[in-house]
Length: 482
Image (cartoon, rainbow, N blue to C red; front, top):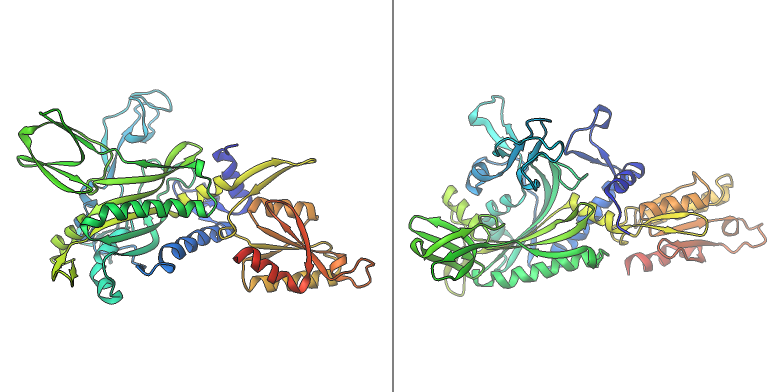
């Protein structure tokens, strides 16, 4: 049964996944703090992504660049001139909305009349140095990818990669969203995981499809349900010709011609042959883009975008900087401006999707059980060690030793603050795959049933097995790492 957003928000606050930033002061819209379990889950998501796209591939390298950079970067990329949203205000209730979030011409809150739409620059502006004047203006980066393009030659020379190859980066980005909302789905401060994969122009379509398939499989391999995922292609522009033919791509009028950018190249059409251009959803730099969408509580929405950025960024930065950003092909002895395939994923949005997908409620004979069926690689806590009697030193000592041994390999928790049934429910609700229970039979030689064994309980099946205390780590290694 689908879970609503309020349930997930409550779980995140109650169990320490996500808190509202500066909550004691009333919070701050679009900003969130990740608690003890949240930071573990977030790190595990990033670790799983990095392992899949960098560590396990010989054609990928990494980068960690600065949040603030030379403002000319954002002029060259088009962000200063183009990056923003159209917004409207309600003349009655004074609330503000993104134009593309509205389905009618009246205020969705009170039905009041709306103002004319106007452009809103969504980059956060700051100043570098002691004087706040135009010469000191800089911006918090709205995306991580531009520093990959500006470092293209540095990485090409030092990593000694041949086309095709890619550069990956995880980092914070900032956008002054008009209407942040839906919990951590749309934030003003967020974290991105982005890849810029450089290919020969004729390879762009092939590798675009490859990356789409690989990224979709990444979610599936980490346990996300296929029925909650779908692939949606951005609607291209439609160029209507006098002949009646309709061409599709990314269209732009340049003087007396229309340039139509497609995945297979750019076509030039005399303007007199064009009757109309019907604009689609593509960004100005892309001839084709796919979204991997997740079925969030508010409906199908983008989880990850995989775009063909062509040679737009390298060309722009080359023009504005005066530096040659090309790849020298040793086989043809020619310089090539590579095309770029960009898989781009928000960590926070990914975090939310994994929580929603893992959340389950099931009715047991005497109670309802809430369980997060997170993949073992993502679970914030891998093992919880639970002593059955905290007033028995022998039981506590054995439990603490097992917990310490487990911490050498995984994130592990020792908890003796409630009855065993309640402790199991806590661990189920935070997604812990395995609980280890130490009881009288485990640690007290005087007990008639003493066997030196402990109980390992599986989160999903609730089945239990008894294993020797000195074999706990080995048994868990097989379950968590194989």
